[in-house]
Length: 113
Image (cartoon, rainbow, N blue to C red; front, side):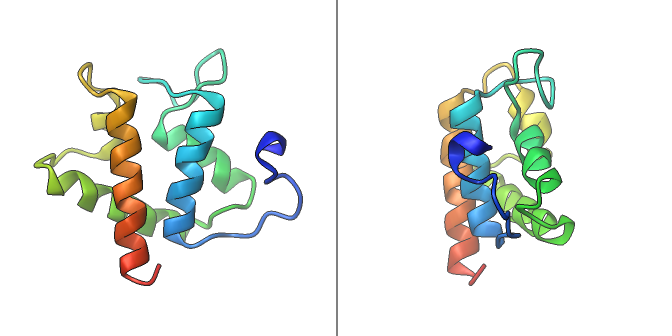
């Protein structure tokens, strides 16, 4: 978190910022499947969100709203499963994760969040 400049005085962020921070966390520390945090420190989407929540960058309620936007983003492309199950599918590449998190952040911003 220190490498991202988010260590000092964390403040809970709205869903759009939380989704952007989730993506930046994955880009910085690495992305993985099947584990919230891998032995080497890589994270899945849910693992990155949990890290941000534990360090005060998002509240439980705001995280739930961010997840809502992520699910809406997945629904747009016909995916009806939970985001964490989709993250773990063998055919889900990181580029798709980046696209869905970016789209979810846009949806949240469009709705004033």
